[in-house]
Length: 76
Image 1 (cartoon, rainbow, N blue to C red):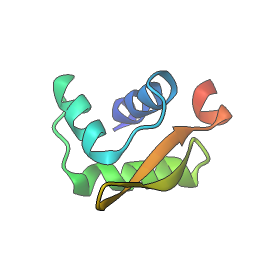
Image 2: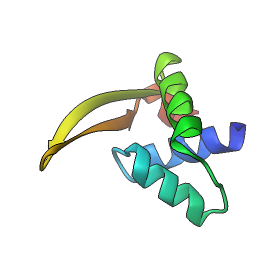
Image 3: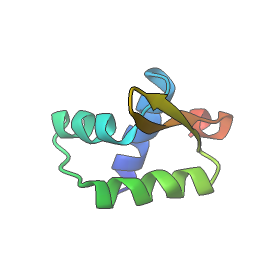
Image 4: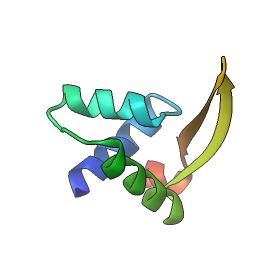
């Protein structure tokens, strides 16, 4: 799980804001098989610890939560 967290932070820093479904697909390309029930608690934990911050954005008829790396997340 630690490597998954680092991978998420890497993408949040290098790719800019990330969202859950994209992150699941991206981690899948790197050999990780995560469900939404596994990923979202990790994202929320990283946000609680101050490594990520999030906001919602409207995309068509959907609402998407985007996660951004904080300075602490960039440093990690």
